[in-house]
Image (tube, rainbow over all chains, first blue to last red; front, side, top):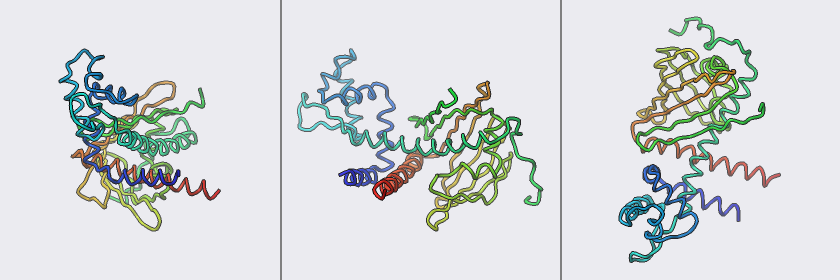
Length: 136
Length: 159
């Protein structure tokens, strides 16, 4: 159950190499592609559906979809122009979790720093007194 | 207001191999700076929770250097670097190397921005020389996150 889900998560995390992560980041660096991902999170859509709200050509959207596809973020099962684009939610989730975990580690560190700062006097000098000089 | 929790923001730059961490503190720059330069204080907060930290030396001044160890399950992980520029209450520029990967080095900058009213915004950037290195670096944090997740699950199940 929950443990199984975690195991699957950890395995996928291992499979998600640094190289793959770079592609995911690069793919999501573009605001239009981030919009497309947000739209696909609601449900599958054809390239034509995706192009409609942007007032851009189907070709332009198709190009963005190919970048997302190369990064593993979306898939297009079957063939033909009208096959729907499907968000590979687990890849997206993994990246989000990956950043979130990194953020949480930093947050834990800074939470400890918050506690420490409360114990320091307000008029503390920014640097400690000079060392005795024995070291160098 | 006094219980406001400050969110740590992470930005992964798409154009250069850089990670940016932004965080605000309810303390003036001099205090936040002191917590970064005084080894007796640094040891109390730097380093992951699950590790014990031991400082070999920590000479935070322009031209100085540092080395510290994280101790985990009988293993020691060493880190060292040089302090390239240390400007009290404003800026620290330093290098960072994980000793198991001695050829890898990150260039780190910490800007201490005075927000007035006794508050500080700390903006830290870490720049490495390839996207793979950056992503591997952050991904290693993820593996640890997964492990800690398991440990917490174990605790939960044991209780």
